[in-house]
Length: 463
Image (cartoon, rainbow, N blue to C red; front, side, top):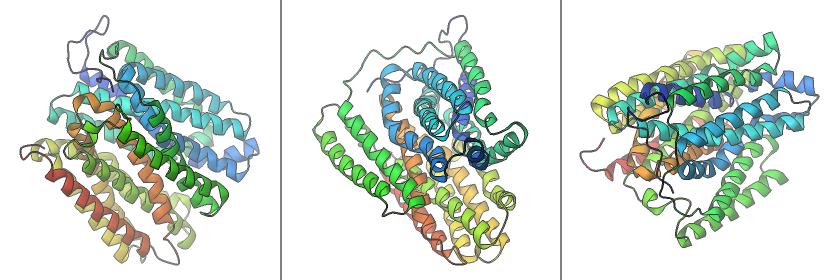
């Protein structure tokens, strides 16, 4: 794996200007926010798209899942490309690819073309995601400044998840469903203009290791099969041919991947990265964080609308009790982390999430106020834990492994979201949500254990 592109020198040459960390942060936030919003903005446009393109319901399901499945399955390959060819060149390539495929999504004339272009959008996203974190990690070498930068990055990245459906609804209502894709072009052009003026040339590092191409292909088969099985099993049924075939493919590919990693001199997941003190524990925290949150959001959405009979608008308003803390708590996390350390802030976030899950299990089924109260604490915990989790993952990884560390973290989060929907969504039944809420409590308890084990391996004077 190549050394990551160094961006931490404020006086680094970028043509006629010098590198300014704040502008690198702005570019990273805009680009990452763009790809995150496309995971949620399309949901509200599904009825309009289906009517316009005369598409079937399964096709519409693939419009939603194709983007996420590609991101989950190709994230490690994208991270490998970032590590080998440099964060900045791959970032720009990803942005261009995302912009072009967004236009093609907006111009799609049938459902199959739209599904293909949604998958192609994911190809751009798998380059942008790891590149942005590598650029921030390399730009902000000081732990305190890095925490603040990541907190802003997390807030901007989290805002589209919270408010994407609202924006999507407004665009569909006023300009039609194609506008939710075509509007991406404006942001893409701004990002490219800013990156041309305020980013380094991004030459790839001189030291390169041979690429484990078979290992990367096996990781794609494993992650892609797992993501497809989880996404389609929930909708089609776990015994249908597609989820079963995807599950078998994932298991075989995983076994082959493990064998390959043990026998390869330069594996896809380098040994020094996985052996880094605390890395595996904090990586697991991120996966479990998204298992609990996204699983609960899916379950509650079904419960509130199908059991309590709430409209989508009312359901969305209830979800603001978690969406608002998730949006703004990263700023708090960035400030308190600089004072108390990442591990303590992460622990506080996990405890808040755990308490929220207990509240949902105890009173969430009885009244809207109980649901809101539980969601509020879960949102506070999620928003508070996000920044220190990223800081600890990137901080425990060897400096020259930042790209693959970022890719592993992003792949874990995407996979965690799919696992959460499949796991917790299958537990909701009857007139209550006690079962999925209790499962979330177990997930948060496991998250606390992973954080504890990760922290034990860190030096006593570390964050």
